[in-house]
Length: 386
Image (cartoon, rainbow, N blue to C red):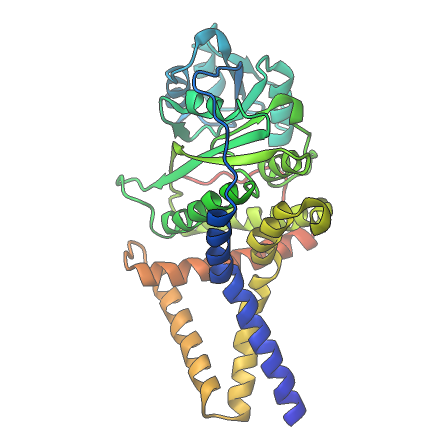
């Protein structure tokens, strides 16, 4: 019995240590490292390379007109700005609306929907600029976004630029859990970028040198992440530009958000396998450190440690219903109770939102892991209502 208790205690404390490092320790450490060993970007004011903006739009009739007006209105030399919309498979009015902008927008349409990567590659084929900007149809960057992004590319070490995502609710307020999560992620992005490079760029606003773009594979589930990491693996930095803000409407329901997060984690598992070379810390140094600490642990390790820690705590409490492990078990009960309270729509309490979001992300991760290993995660995106 004593041997079993000792083993369970080791499992418990390892779980606590890894979870604590992933969610608290790494943020503190990367903040200190990025402050002590900050890598500056040599931005060039007035630098204006040719930029091709690629919008992959499948059945986006609700937002595509607003998106095109937003993109056309971006402040940048007209002769150096190209807008390409790939609307393959769209059966709504997306194609018709885009045709109204003939001469200002290059429309690519095919009757068959073959996934986002195929659409991206088609857009790349039509792109004339040396910089490619991928931006989602429901994402609206500020007027100066292109000019601000271009300045970073004056530094030859910069291979890609990622903007800031701002999630808003339909009432114009920050979306509860999702907004809180993105504030946390934005802090980590800022530190990762200052230390060396972002570990992944989202599709809301991601610019990359065309020469560095590499097909992530037709079956890629989170193609923007794989594209950005392969750019970084080539020795170029992916930098975070928080002054480039792209607003996006939050998903309407927790179910839609769950579907999205589940797919992202399934793609995360795929990426961990596909980018196995990044485990070579001796070769990739700072990039590997940030990648493993920021992504790998939270995609494929901590989701399993939360339930394991709970089960081990329960077993230790059964062996000795007093002392520290009683408090540890009680603390977890309170934590999960607050998370359940977060299921209520409209909840604004920050502590409740935080507990809910941590549990929500890890539960979604477990579901995504299952979908990936059972090969039940479809390649095509399941569109969320907004």
